[in-house]
Length: 181
Image (cartoon, rainbow, N blue to C red; front, side, top):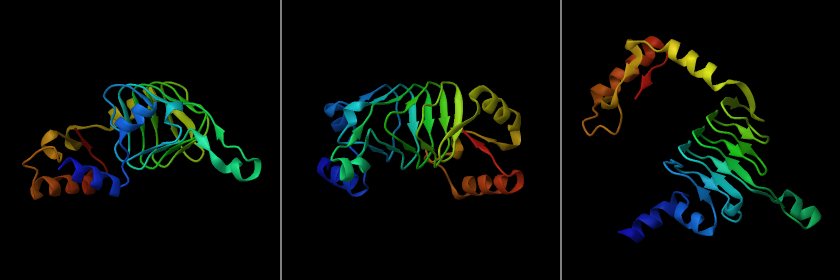
């Protein structure tokens, strides 16, 4: 069973985080890294804090091999990702970057420069668009009872049904967006 799990994981392109830690990756507690790619050949240059979440397809690179062909050397630089950080789906974190604590990186961003703590950054290249507190305050103002849905409306609920799914779709159609616990 363990071998089958390992094979399926490899076929899906998932990395073995425990193996990367044995190679030198530093990672904190309560991290949800999903189906990401963390530079396997230079993972010991990467530090990830506590309570970090990566959306699907996130890449974290500590090396840049573009110089190898022309200079016969690969550029390598440390990457530091703070605590309480969310990095959106398919974002890329490049060598030499430091992302502070309490940061949201929007989906599809390319992080090629340092991102300060308590900020929201998006884009290609990623740039800070606002302080985290301002972003969260704006989201809180959008929240009304009509668009808040609890745990029973997630796939974690073993009784999640077609009716639950339809209620979520209908609420999105009516209000444009919803919030699910």
